[in-house]
Image (cartoon, rainbow, N blue to C red):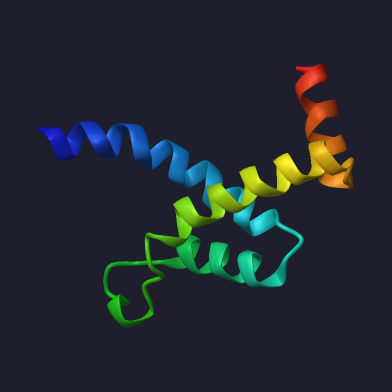
Length: 85
């Protein structure tokens, strides 16, 4: 039951993050996102580590924070997105 509850919360967030990975400017993250989207159970040897999803979320938060504090382009986009919503 606990596992099902965790998956119900984590899976939608994981999908959103993987979609964002695929659209990231960094080719490394874009490639990794594609691998997550192509993953099938019969390809165990090519399965990307699940740890990359929360790592990407942390990276995004760090880049957003740096952008806001330093006035970077990503931070400006994030502020514009939040004010438009």
